[in-house]
Amino acid sequence: MHLFPWGLWLLCVASSSARGDSGGKAKSCSELRQLYGSKGFSLSGVPQAEISGEHLRICPQGYTCCTSEMEENFANKSRSEFEGMMKEASRSVQVTLTSQYKNFDGCTSCSFSNMGYFQDLLNKSEKALYDTFPSMYGELYTQNMKLFKDLFSELRRYYRGSNINLEEALNEFWTRLLERLFKQLNPQYHITDEYLDCMVKHSEQHKPFGEVPRDLKLKATKAFIAVRSYVQGLSVGSDVIKKVSQVSLGHECTRAIMKLVYCPHCRGMSSVKPCNNYCRNVMKGCLANQADLDTEWRNLIDSMLLVADRFDGPSNVDTVIGTIHTRIAEAISNMQENKDSITAKVFQGCGNPKISTKASSGEDKKRRGKTTPDDKPSGLGLEKLVSDAKGKLRDIKDYWVTLPSVLCSERITAGSVNEDRCWNGMTKGRYLPEVMGDGLANQINNPEVEVDITKPDMTIRQQIMQLKIMTNRLRNAYNGNDVDFQDASDDVSGSGSGDGCPDEVCGKRLSKSSSTRQPGTHAIPNQSGRGINGASSKSLPSSFLIFLSMAVMAMQYLWR
View 1 (cartoon, rainbow, N blue to C red):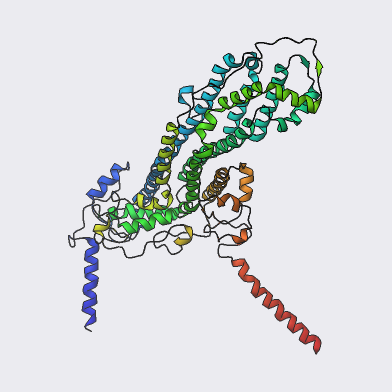
View 2 (view 1 turned 135 degrees about the vertical axis):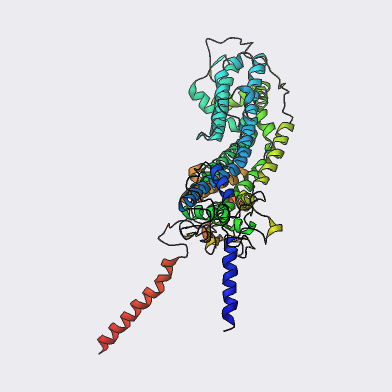
């Protein structure tokens, strides 16, 4: 008997608080009307004062200033505003990657002054060759001009991503150059194509260009693989950000964001901001698929940082790419200076060719050149670029898992100091549920967003695969190995996520059996008819027991 008045009092208090501090008098909806109008909606049909909220489908069904139509309009507005916030948040990362791409690569249609660092380096080396070789070598250069142009064209095509074997292209250049120079330096002989073939076969023994071809091939291959993979990594990263930012908002997420942002206004609490942890749970649920990019995104950034380290050291990009013309001059000079001994060795191995009836003195052709081009790059420009790029890459490394906190900044939420005076989804008060972890699998018990963890977003899964492929390419580039995108996808087509090892071992481990790898943390969509919990595998023991029981019954029947 004594409990009834106490319970009746609590009911009265709850009813009173639902109506607001003004007692029985309905609260004005002036603030809500002002907000609603500022969003571009008509004020026709908007209540002047609070009404009963049984019609609400998203907000709590207490007294409210929102009609069903207003709730729907606010939900649609929530979707567009959130997608705008996502694009704005991703724009800074995309700008970072795009600006770095332009710094290093430029663009194919840009003027010479707007070329990126790597292209500019190659262009300057080619220009230096055209400027210095005519005076150094005379007809030795002019008659072979196309050969030099073709070399730089092949190097540029490889850098731009063409399917060219760089080692073969360099070998072909040295072979053609040797054939032409040998004929020009020995005009008194009639040298046939068959004789040149013999000479080329013995070139490894007498080394007409010294160690330059072998040394340049080794260093140039590593340098070009590194720079090509690095700028491709910047491009892939930017493309992933762009495509993921365009993923549309789901129905449950739209409802959750509407409840987070606009329901306090409907309840007459326009000055009350959402609780920070409440906002984070909503964002973690809405961005569950995006958070699954984190592992492979970190792997990509780590691999790019490692490849950037390759720009210095023995395969210094400035030294290798910027001085190609100098190395070619060194090789030609070596052949000129050792012409007699080289010719003698060729004659010894291939026999003496016939004397030519059109022999000429060829003084201009025999002009001796010295390796004088002294425009060696300082390296300071690249060092500054790389240092700046590394800092910016580290800044965006944890982008995907910090995105919920970024979107729930103090500009939007009440912050940690107002935990007892914030909108918790129902009223003004502390938000009690714990904050969920990151990623799709951790949202199974998210109290704010209903997330189906068995249906990952396919657009984002495709981008995870693109990150894996590019990371594999970068790891191989770090070890000096070139891998086509098609080959890379074969290596990473399994369902496990990357292990993120940041050392030289990564590239070597790619060929190991998948049984040595840790289980993946990403839920890859049914590739073998299984759900994420492997439900189909669990049914095997029960099927076996049924079969065994039937077999035993059959045996008993036969024994009778």
